[in-house]
Image (cartoon, each protein chain N blue to C red):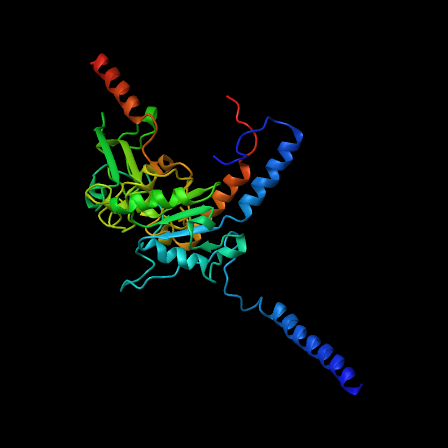
Length: 193
Length: 163
């Protein structure tokens, strides 16, 4: 008889004790949880030690971006690309260093360089890109860069841009209708001359 | 495709069933881990406790028979392409494919001179979501999978498509 009641007592106390520990962990574990609740919160990108000051060099591996107003069409990034995922076509500007409002072309870069060429095509296929960052170093106007890092204020970091259609991964940076607009402009000038 | 796929006309019952079915499918797309290269490491990281794919209902499976989603993570060589197709065909309907990383999307660094690499896994199997990156961060993969979940949720599996 005594055995019967001690068994009941022991089972109740052990369940209460065990569940108490579970309850404590339920609230305590939230504080030292390692899991990132991804869509709601994001981690800052870890800094890579590349041997010199991190803030002045862009070593982030994210989506490439081009500021087309600063691009002079020198093709240095195209030549530097080890996988040839950058495709650029340029045409001669009718007037060097002048704005062409018809095709939204800016004549002078923010560094003060007068542009001689109009970029009619600037495609970067991000599905072929290997994110090596080699195209950003030779750029004389520093207009091609990976989003984030020193440029985070202008272009916040973007490394998750998956698409259901592959052709959406080809980013076309050139002004729309630049080629056609330039041809029309040239034809107009020829007619006047 | 399946037994029920696109066989019914539009009506009230089918519409509600449709929503229930697509909701059920979208909340538990178990994935078949097809890791062939460095992207597989990121896929493992996404499934591990730091990023924990299980909290959005995505569980790694090792057999194509038990999986709904195939994550092709890594370079697919010509020799492997036949196996990819075979494994895709072994999966039960409904099945989805996520092409993870540059190599699976378009051949990546090998797109120009790689004589042995398949230039994008979409040449052999239909792909639903392309995740860019070389390799993509685990967050990028999770974002791609969330996009796939949205896609499945929008799908109407039972309703017969008109036109």
